[in-house]
Image 1 (cartoon, rainbow, N blue to C red):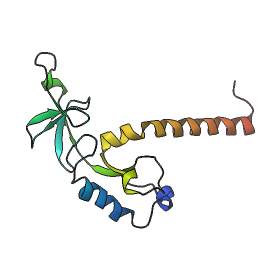
Image 2: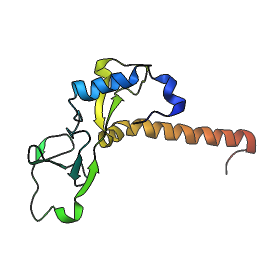
Image 3: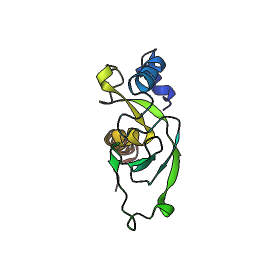
Length: 142
């Protein structure tokens, strides 16, 4: 995932090389959470289940082989495609902690799931800050 210009100074100068080493060296071009392959179009059902064409099986959101129940899962109306892009993620959300154990190769879906609590916290903080500034300059909200 691209780094915003205002956050670029939080990352080390060799971040591109470190990211490549994690995504393609250690993870071998697959998401470490769900095993989706980088750069490929995959068929998925929107709930985490996806078709692994190499193995010829359906996998769940954690990369485990799963079965679809015929009649219950209407595949033709739910199957979508997406291109998988791997990104290196910090497990503890601390960009200064670049230890090998703290970095993970996640696809865009798993990265967003992993970052959901942090995004929620930042959204709350931004809203709280805006309200505080409004109270400071315009009086309390009603």
